[in-house]
Image (cartoon, rainbow, N blue to C red; front, top):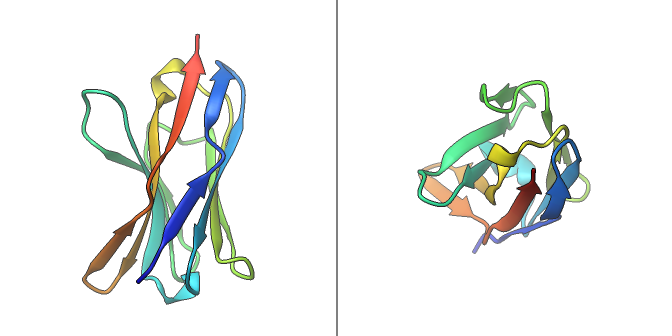
Length: 115
């Protein structure tokens, strides 16, 4: 059973930075891709960044230029560096991984940005 464990969330002032980590229980290079999603209260879950097995990276418009996704294959960990955080970035952030037809999720980590 694949497990994803996020960490690094917290409370930060607008304009500040946080780095989220997602540690996988298996070799992350076996996944088709991994990514970060977020869900704010009353809103649908949305994807914000994605990294494929070959290292191709995608960002969604809401975070382009501010967030950076990366990975450390030796640690089976994916990161999300979040800079210049805005109030609207407040959400629970989830790590996700896709392996064939299977989609795995972490438990989520809360990010709260104070204005």
